[in-house]
Length: 244
Image (tube, rainbow, N blue to C red):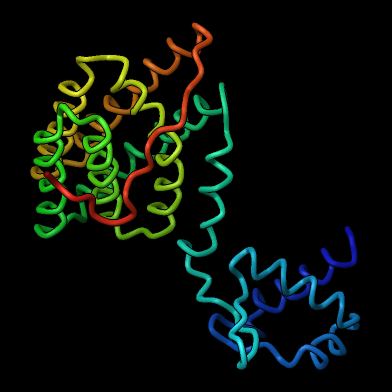
């Protein structure tokens, strides 16, 4: 472990021990360096690394603060790492999605509100309208799943699945471009998930979500076996895609 890594570990330990709770301001650089027995240069390097990791934030003219440490913030870098995965690793990512998403959909069925259902149904309706527009269809596909996972009220789970699905979106887009029948099947699978959520049936919700993920996974396995590359796809809009 380098000296910088040791400095980072010490600051992390202070946060874990509650000495520096979320939102708290760090002592002045010179004071903190002296308390930890570090040089000021080493302290600066540690702080920079923790800023990149979204653990700390520098407020110009005010000082350095611990962030909220919310899952959505700390796991932000995962999406960028996932986007670099290639080949068989994309298939592994789809397998991870298969393990998480059906269970998350079952949980959503037990917690979903009428307002949540209206949001899910809005994107399902937009998918039907966009069945001939692959890019728009997939934007609402992603938004549909975000709305379902948000209904779990589990921010950590929602963040993880958001980053995982972001990369598998390219596989779904390629599928939509290569298979003329994919749009109809995709919409039907989403309709089944929606009906299970309306019924508040967690077992049915898990089964329909598993079938949906398995469809993409089987398609992906077949195409990777043929040595086909998986190109990047248009990324979904971060919030609510615009319908046409």
